[in-house]
Image (cartoon, rainbow, N blue to C red; front, top):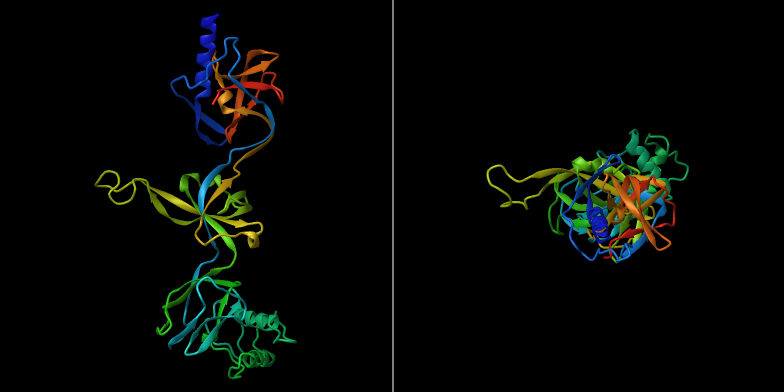
Length: 372
């Protein structure tokens, strides 16, 4: 009797110490560590030291990665003409449509919404998408009554609207817009930092401000070989500073990212050929309710990736697995004060549990597990 108990205990110890080394494409690899006694002794009556429930529900192969909370759409703003920088918006401030970004020689450069940059002065007779952008902004600001914002022609009506806009800011009413009057951006902008100081003489190619959008995002990196585990549109959960959670989805996968030197940078690893640098891809997460997301810029966060999900499957804790003497795996079902081995087929691993099929397992049954 004692030898039988010891044999079962040995099989169970091997099974409970099985570790999932890799999961990809629905497959798995198991490695048995040498058995050791960590409080996993069976009772004298053959019952396991503890039990857990067979559950039916959704099982995810998701994982958790470290990320950084930030803002979308970083870009640099350079002055369009010569002069002396006399004012800049403060770092961390948000600038909305028609707001001042900076001033050169006391003349404000104002933000307008649009995707085409301000690459030329705009005047009567000009045509193009930039003219449409200007007209849309004039209408939104209340200066473009009667303007057809779908038409890309700078008309006399456009010139009149520009004069009204200039008058509102106590500027000379020319009816024309100089390159240095406007900076176009897709939406409200947040000043990340100032790249020039008041009194500097900015010029073409010399950034004045680094700005971003005001919408919060998360960035994280994955090894290029694992990039397939994150797909555009996948749902994620982000744990924010302070411990609150926020739902979101993957917006993009595959932006360039610096390789990771696994040997710790300069001086790490052996000499001669450099470290083991793995190519990385950048993943961007957007939030379902970005306005509710709080936290300092560049705060560390954790991102839970959903991965593959199996719905309505039976699962048991990974620690419940037995290495059966005849090969394969099983679990020890405990019922009515007795224990019996049931052979099972393994499916997906996720979150410390494993999908099981076969035998006569049912939801709510109890299976033996190690006592931790």
